Length: 120
Image 1: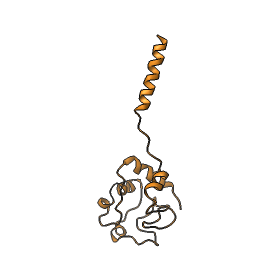
Image 2: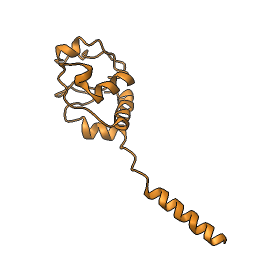
Image 3: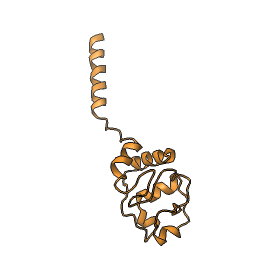
Image 4: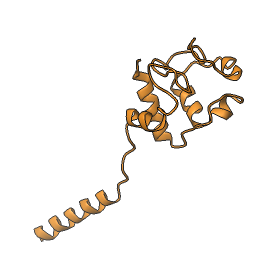
């Protein structure tokens, strides 16, 4: 009877492990894969530099030419505002120049945590 319990226990562990989904990539990996085409931490590209973006007012990197819509938005980048922005920039600030969005909430969360800590 003891062997039956061990076999059933092992089977249950294998079954549970097979049903698990792969965890999402970390924020740094996501940033490198999905954001660096337009952004860097330490320099402007097609989009503004994002190092130290967390806590910064939107459209305030002097070397970048922002849309009038973003200049007039009066947004301060926090976890909540970044989440809303990454989910749908056009809904948050109509007329801005960013067309990219991140549908997956877990990926947005990982990116936001990475940006919260990212320095140039």
